[in-house]
Length: 289
Image (cartoon, rainbow, N blue to C red; front, side, top):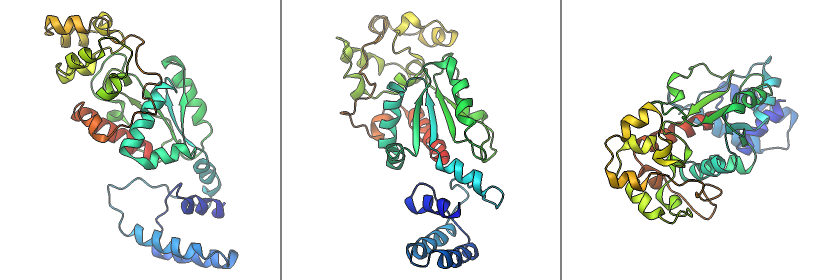
């Protein structure tokens, strides 16, 4: 198990920051049992040095004891799970965000250290999250990303327990209404809607709260929540006409085609709330990966 665990570190799958005295014990152990594998020497020196530079804001750590060695190793050997409502569309969006903000997460997904799974709708998310969680013993490496169906303010992370390592799936509810509200213009313009350019122009004339609450698929016809009615009551007639029906089913499929490369700036142009939320979400996914 020790060999497997340290192998994760050498492969770059996980990170280890041993204190110098612990690094020395590990080096003696590895010299005794694997005398021809000199790669451990350099790795342990670098890891021990890095531990001295860890700051309070660094990623949370998991303490491994003799008793937890086997279950922790098994937990870390399984892929972390990001559970979304639609694996094809939400998955393509998250992959684009990974590539823009944190290529290491894109690489983890490619290597299957991180898996984006499909729940098929909100109703099954809790059940599937619990099913995934049962596969973990010491560290529940599952996060659920869900639509904000009621348009409430804030995000689920604001009420999240600070306990670490997590014993239950983490939950992130989008601050905006749904994942389509986070699509940059270079994605929306690829829709098959005949008036896409005009709709994008009118959308960006709205204030941040109106953009947050717009039903991108159903438009104002689907704006039935109290928060939406309040936000949209000041819309001008031309904006109402443009967004009466929304994009319907005319978004690209998948939602972010592989041919489109997005950058941090593309997302930041949607507003500081989008940039902040995506940064926070990726930090939490990274902590579980």
